Image 1 (cartoon, rainbow, N blue to C red):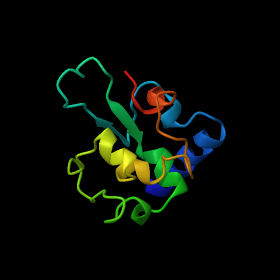
Image 2 (image 1 turned 135 degrees about the horizontal axis):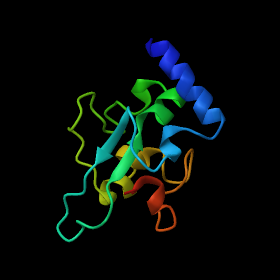
Image 3 (image 1 turned 180 degrees about the vertical axis):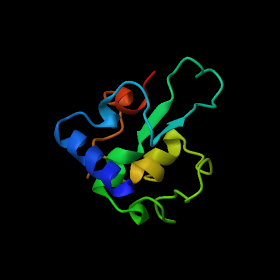
Image 4 (image 1 turned 60 degrees about the horizontal axis):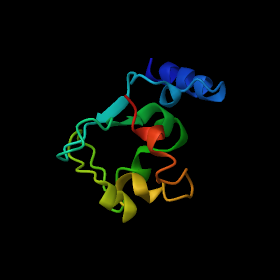
Length: 111
């Protein structure tokens, strides 16, 4: 069943219908609520686990260099850490993925 679901998600990605492209979070997405005071109105970051999992093996992100542990809720991600190439910033500094900057905020931070 898991293999079938992964194949379905890969097919959706090829058609440009990957969950990461949807406005609403879907099964497998992880929502990172903002905890910084004054940022309550800024939307949370929504991580498309399926989109990343279809392309990469678990250990690419879940290691000490990148910083993600295998237990949900343990990552204390901040934009400062992303700028230091930790967590999302390990890939999202321009290569291999799109860069994190003011022009790309809405790719992750969605209502």
